[in-house]
Image (cartoon, rainbow, N blue to C red; front, side):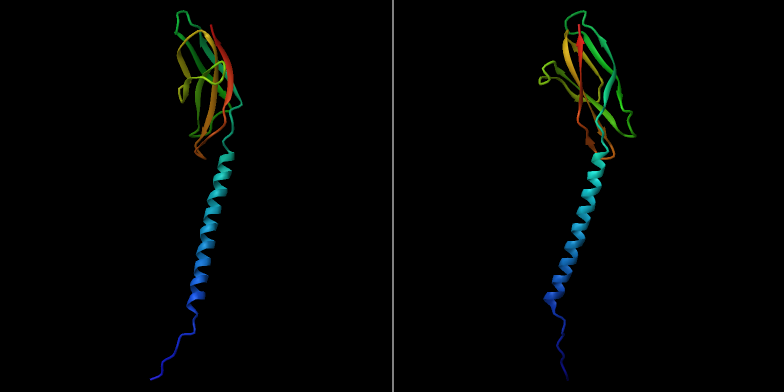
Amino acid sequence: MIITKSIINTPILCLNIFLLQTFIFKSIILTIFLSTSQAHAQCTVPTAITNENITHATCPGNGCITITSVTPALNNGDYYKYALFEKDGFTEVKPFSITNTFTNLQADTYQVRVRRFCNSSATFSNFITKTLVVR
């Protein structure tokens, strides 16, 4: 009976398989990163708050601001979020939400901020600001 010894070098074969798996994994990660980076670039910042309705306060705390138009137009699944700050721009009066109407306002100067949510990349844009006065 003749016994033959395998000439395949097992450590080298294992190393080659490991290197191939590492290359495939890195390629997948790079593809995901590049597609995510490109999608993020598509979420454009709103350019203007083009129309608003202001109801001036006739009694303390009954003023109202409604943002009725923001440009550019939205793509499918995208939406705008709105926030209200005091005139200093630091003190938040109403946090970001999908509601475009701010109620129960005192007569004062406010900053409205609008940012866009892009469904394609699941990200928010930077915000734009417009100063409005409730008398």
